[in-house]
Image (cartoon, rainbow, N blue to C red; front, side, top):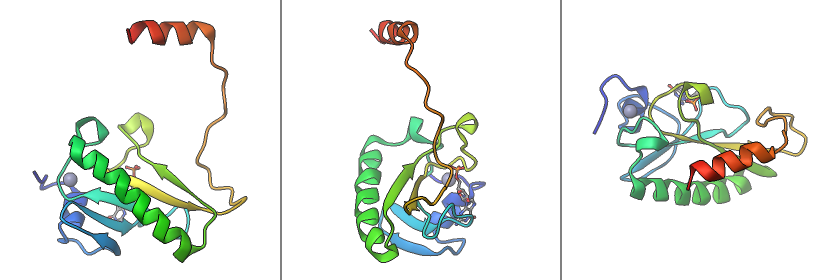
Length: 135
Ligand code: 5GP
Ligand code: ZN
């Protein structure tokens, strides 16, 4: 299904031009317009899913396999030292385009790109609460 107000539906369908690195029946892989680093790319399914919560299971599996394939190739092309795969769900987590996508962000040693968090401490109370609620 497509969403006619969704920019990534239009990009994935080729209705809006993009710097496409790869395309198959299910996905288009494009360069991000506001890259965190040189080569920052997005894996975008051609069908519209708001985010991971409603992504089709088979497509979810294919997306990770594609991320592996793309990063293996791109790390040689870009000569980067590492990769972050980032995937944001909902506004609170930084999602700004509400069509599922995975970021592939090339990293170089000491590049100071701000993807991360201040490490906290796992509290016994939190651990017990979460484990109990999941039972
Ligand atoms: P999010 O914050 O939803 O995880 O990521 C959205 C990403 O899409 C951002 O990194 C943003 O730069 C990128 N983006 C938004 N609009 C466009 C566009 O029209 N073209 C391309 N190539 N990237 C876009
Ligand atoms: Zn869409």
